[in-house]
Image 1 (tube, rainbow, N blue to C red):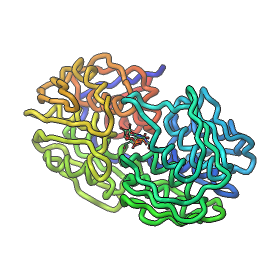
Image 2 (tube, rainbow, N blue to C red):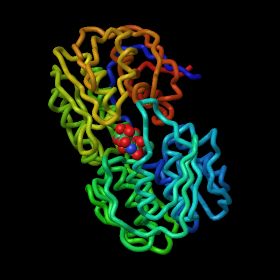
Image 3 (cartoon, helix red, strand yellow):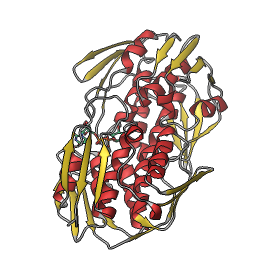
Image 4 (cartoon, rainbow, N blue to C red):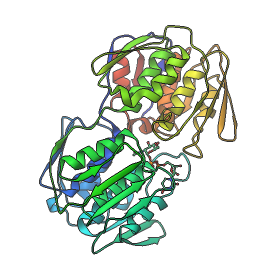
Length: 415
Ligand code: UD1
């Protein structure tokens, strides 16, 4: 297991470049099996979740090449619709093969997915959608099997705008007969990105990015070249890095619209954010104010930024409250934060944060991907050294985080 060691209190300056979105890349990789020919996905982040998706594709016989962040996938040699169990259970995104398998081959067997330990992560909305399209579903201990001779478009209402369920239904319905409507669909930018990718392959999807998506089924999809959008959570993490170290940095390769929910809160706290072409300058040198935050599906404040903003609020005078409404168990980082001197308590779905004057470096453990990123942020502003064990969690979703931060002045290294 690798760990990170950070010596805090270094001012950051210069430019940092965001990679392409992890949460776009993963479903796009799964969707690439829908196209005939070789699909090229450009600027794919070099993260362990992507490497696992590649292993899964190779495990079913696809030809995959990953060179200099370009991923080429040819599905023509796929000879199996069952993912290797030990590999697929490592990541949640393995479940995103369900829709594409069903659409293209009429069947799939997938083991229950893994991923971050942030509460029970049910899949009934994915299955409800696929079943409405005509799939027969067998749920056994540890795996799900789906099959259908033919998928037929229909109207689907999601009880909650689940990102994963919207994606799976979208990927299944593009080859279904007739029209499908997904109401109360997730509106996350990664859904729009997936839809743009599928449309580039020849799909007919309308309304992605709104809560009602319409899909007219087509007979076939053709391989294409595509670059996923920049990672808004990675960019948000760097915005907080600037604010928590009271520094000024430039973040390149960002889509500002996708960052609005995070920018708005940071601005409210007193962080100065200037826009440029494809880049923003974040200045955290002003005195910052406490605030309250509630995580919500997009365009609300992203749950994937909750731990990072909590790190920042811990360093700001006054009392802030963060309410987590998306996941039921996403406060695992608080114990580790409090070891570093924060004063945070939990009451139901809310964390009550009393700002403190000093954060102290110590040995801590990353319990999941974003918790790990938040501990890095704490380390950047702490007095002394912070040692973060289980860095593997961070490498699931951040491409070269320590190198990128080192480049803008952080003292951080991996051992
Ligand atoms: C995706 C993101 C993850 C992000 C989350 C919410 C990827 C690979 N991961 O995860 O980083 O934190 O969106 O923005 O894109 N739910 C159900 N039934 C279901 C499915 C989900 O009740 O069938 C619930 C979940 O328990 C959770 C909520 O819906 O409480 C949100 O989950 P969902 O939007 O599905 O998240 P993921 O797609 O797993």
